[in-house]
Length: 310
Image: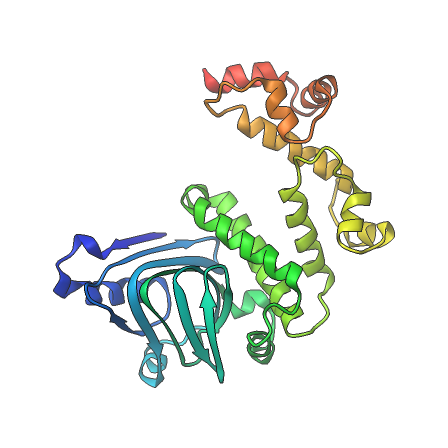
């Protein structure tokens, strides 16, 4: 499901109503006030069954969710948003915070809140069902006060949302990957909430962060279990105890993900030599890559590229 709205395509007198209607489909009901001349660009994408993302940018606005809006609809959702431009003002549960570009905010959508910016601004949010997080609402509300308690997790999720904003249209077009990205994003949100609420992360949260870090560093030739353990301040024994896969060891999983990345890139209309693509994904030795690719897929990388690029 994709919703796109650009109020510049509408007469000025219809813009606020159109935005309210689109927001009802994309997120929870809220009173909307727009600065004049009103402009807003809204996007909504669903990533699986329990996670969605929502983008809003444009002229100044105020979103207020009070008793009337709560009576209209109060789904069990939490939103984690990154301010993408401008300076916002966020108030909920006694928290009054100024959010600048790159800052995160956690919003409990089951309760009243007020969020606004003046001039030009933008925000990108992931919305996750409470049931997917598996956390008490008290934990979520406590986390909102200290989101940056763990700076590393905070930066990781902020960078993930910024990248997701760039890529979401392409991801949404592929239902399988979209659901996987939704699951991974929800796990990262859960990890941030638990660290911000000063609760120890469980094994699933730690593993989700490790997997995400590995995927961001697949192209590093020196990527290894030892480096992964060192980057996450854990022992190799702890890393191996955390790792759970029905058939693949950690090193085998890294190899498979690298090969899949090369195989995917070989279908793209790029003039890059096969060796350069393989090197980009961490294969320093061309002979080693060729042998691994053929063993995994039964044909050479050159044959694969020819078959899928016609």
